[in-house]
Image (cartoon, rainbow, N blue to C red; front, side, top):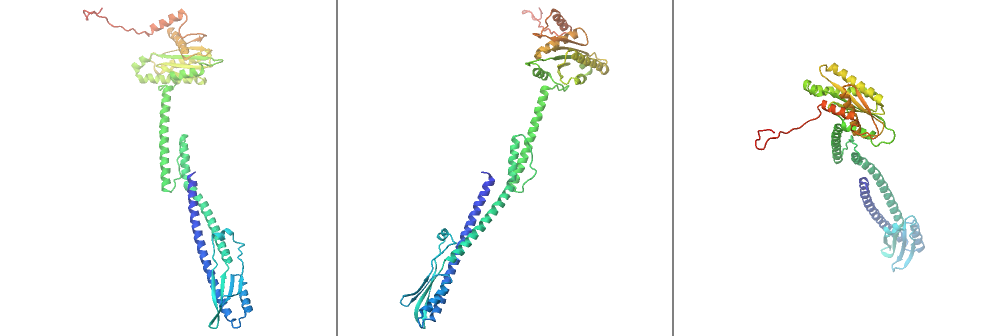
Length: 443
């Protein structure tokens, strides 16, 4: 059961108890008043009738007395009127049954009224001639008491209904901030944050709303901080921080998504662009000049690939850049590679005329699903051939069925080994060996 219903139920129960107590108290006061009225009426009627009958005792005119008693009895306010002589003999007896047609029987049983009886002496001079007794009729008292109780119950019921309706509206308005607090808490579970602008005036509810607003603000700040950290980590994971292009992991993920395990027709090109002599540039111009050159080269590559919306540009490290060109044939890839190399050479000649910047490209054209390692190895072989031949341009080769990452022909092996030796890409490690007897003599 909701708090609103509990409070409304408790208020209605309290109001019902209060109204019931007031109704019972008012019913008792009305009953006591009517009983007193009946007693007073019976005594007044008996006294008046006794005095009236005293004037008729000289001749003991019983018919005249009966006429007088009947006239008074017919008014209906008396249930029984009796006249007895001195010896107790009943001379006249007029009585009427109690008829309570408009009063429920349960009410008569619930609120009993004892009809009061009053007596008065009938005198003959100074001598007692008889006694008259009068019993009031309770019918009118029951009707009056029932009408009063019914009207009071109706008034209390209408009052209770009005209080319940108005109290319910008041409670609903008072507890509305709690409903908004509940919505605020549920919104937090869905990572939605909103602040309650309407602050209740009730001190307790005001504190709850303010605390909830502060908690919502704090949680939102925490989520924003965590989101910023997650975005930063994600950016560092898949983006090269220097050139703002993709890194090796990003490129590998793109190749895996677009090529590896795909069914159906898959074609495109994979291109490697290498910018050499960066180490000499860093030594003579500083690392800032080298970093600036790499950023400018990345911008050149992205500008050339602007007309290839599916192109993926990444920096593998140093001066090595890789391009994945889905659905691009050898001609398109060659034109893009030549444009990139021409722009790089022109830019280097303009901005760094005294630096010997070498750029070359090598690529592979694939027509089947392939792994990142296969594409990279085959493109690297083509790049080595371009550098070995001092071509200054780009070399492309196909990725045939069953093609491996290693060179297949003797010419390819020879070219690769000569390129490795020319670039001094082989490192030899040595350790001097001395005599056990004379450690100063090197063997």
